[in-house]
Amino acid sequence: MHKKKYWFTLIELLISISIISILVVILFRAYNSISQVTFRSQQEKNIQQEMIWISQTLQNIADNHSIDFDSYKLETTNEKLFLSGKTEKIIITTTWICIPDIQITTWFTQEQREDPCQLIIVNQNGSITPITTTSESFISKPYFTIIPSKSNEEIIDDPNWFPFLKIRQPGFQVNFTIYTPLYEKWNWIKMSKILFQQFFNLQK
Image 1 (cartoon, rainbow, N blue to C red):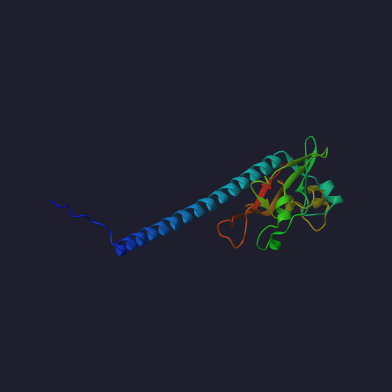
Image 2 (spheres, rainbow, N blue to C red):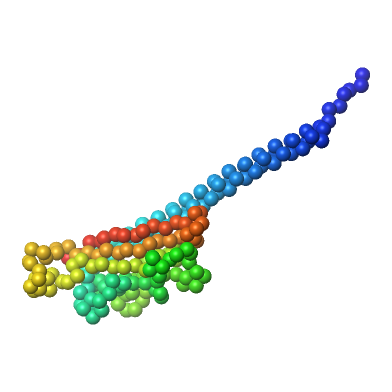
């Protein structure tokens, strides 16, 4: 008996190819979306870990230092933090030229990527200890605010102050923004940043 053979017609073949193509496009878009979300999540995780590291480092410094008012008498600035410990004085500042947050418009230039703003500790012997990790994050120019702005003795001697305003626990506040090194304002995949604004209590 003659067996009947079944073959795809040209139209059926084209329809099959079209359906497969549509499925491939849908799967590719889904995969691409998942990849973008995963990438963005990893970027945010990196700068969150960087923020925690910076916070812990500054807290460790605060636990062992107080405000160096003598240095502030020589140089009045909110871009450096002068601290004194039991054995030495330190300065917390930044490397090279840092850009204020309001001037970071869309993304970092190649020059800024090659020499990014870095938060550092300048020790009394001149050695430098980095606080931030440039491979993980960039930061805007930090600003420091010390409380009180004068030593307790100066506050008491100042006729504009009253003794009950004497601050028993000095501290400092630091403000800057942490950006992912791949930050691009108009690219949501890479647009990751965190505002760092924290107050630290110092030694009495």
